[in-house]
Image 1 (spheres, rainbow, N blue to C red):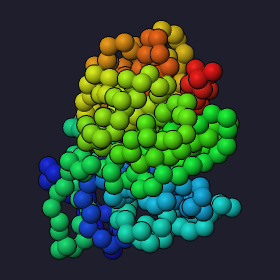
Image 2 (tube, rainbow, N blue to C red; image 1 turned 135 degrees about the vertical axis):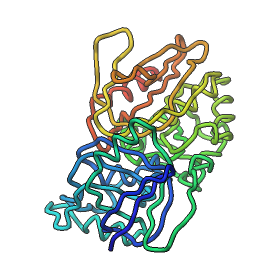
Image 3 (cartoon, rainbow, N blue to C red; image 1 turned 180 degrees about the vertical axis):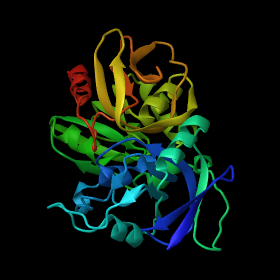
Image 4 (tube, rainbow, N blue to C red; image 1 turned 90 degrees about the vertical axis):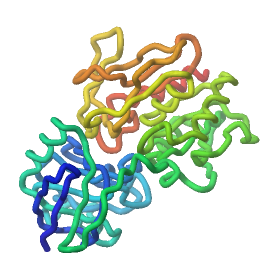
Length: 345
């Protein structure tokens, strides 16, 4: 069945449907990764977004068992690809990408000129869009006006792993591999909802991790208040992706919306004060503007020089804008977890 992707400026792209035949609206963004679509599509940071893949072939290795996903469901509002492969070949494949999209009610379109679409988003910035089928039209809706963090965060506290030290993970839309990276390093992790007061945990907490997540960080007001309390107690903190922005705001800095964001598994980041560059996985539309007092820049983006992390000048408090846990992507920066844990000792 044919369908259309319509942008807020009136531009229309005709495509062939391979997902759910369901109209959907969202923010149209692009990602430059070549692999890892099962992990990316289940990343809660993509909540409310219609994702355009720049890599021309998607679906060729199918969809693995849900234990390999980064959350329990698809998080995107829609998927746009250049060429969809309906005959995947991989030992771990359990279903096709088309079957997965249809099962979870997410539209997918095969649009041949994804290059032109991506160039438009790059030059003019991300914009609202909608996928429509026939006469079933819907209105545009800006997902960043919603508290997306509240939509994707867990509802109940749970624990994972065993260890002498216990850390709390504030789930603002956490990818599962963050917990795996922490427990594999001998930590016990208590995962709490975005609006949970970490200081009420009865067990002794050695540190707090603020996870990745979707949307505008200023919408997570309860989390910001919690992080301010944690900073006042001088408890060690590690922020990841959205956690970088939340830590910045809580400490007195500012954030802003990027023109087209950073999404993919090939974003180059430089360790400030060195010539060391790392390939990183990223998925965010907002960034740090003003670094708060007492902090300094930790990393910056080699493409556009935007901030990619902050670190306190004397306390064990730090954050990164990229994903050190990868999933998918390079593991060049998983040493960030070790750096933080060493600070706890």
